[in-house]
Image 1 (cartoon, rainbow, N blue to C red):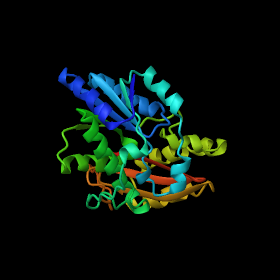
Image 2 (image 1 turned 45 degrees about the vertical axis):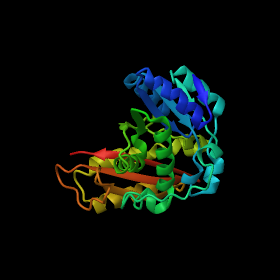
Image 3 (image 1 turned 90 degrees about the horizontal axis):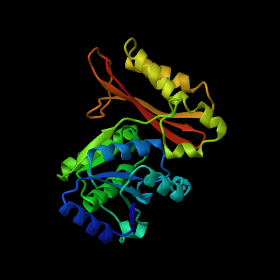
Image 4 (image 1 turned 180 degrees about the horizontal axis):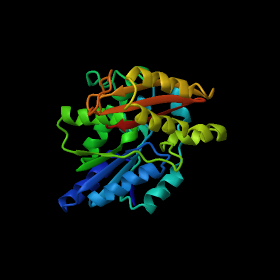
Length: 281
């Protein structure tokens, strides 16, 4: 695995690979890698000649500075995992490399970045869009891989690519889960033993909500979800919303034949976790 820390170095290397006709797959990460990240890398390996992974904890997408400081960093194990899973190239820049000057670009995604996560984390998706656009312009991949756990982020990135006519195919990938159903996340490392033991309740509630959606109203479903999380004092439900899977606008009534996605954000102790489930019936 080749490791590059500067933009000119990786651009020059990729330029030579592209001259030779190699296709490039790209998996952006913030490190603290887990099996979910590895599933993206493996999918990229199947669909491309060369796979590039980036590790960069993007400071401008954190609305909570304490969250940025406490974000898990596991550089040595990350490098080892990438080598063991056939990553060809790692881009490992520091903040000065990515942001040599103060970054004040503002993007307009309409309602997409102002609802759900955007409502509770103002500016978060603008920070995501800035760094993803930079990476796509540096790497110029044929395909880029993003997990569906961050469903709204995926929608924002798809809008970014469309708005700027960036020549890349965005590949959505299924959420990767632990054996007990908890969606894999680097933040799971920060859960206490007790918190980790009850964390699967999030996915359990979503699965039950998917079943109940066929028989009760949207408001009744929301009320039921609130009551389910009130059973554990460790949980603080931030939001549970039913939305159109394409526009992410709220779904106020559930109708047969209608598809929607249920999205949730919950604090478990001091750790904020998100998840979602697609509802088709």
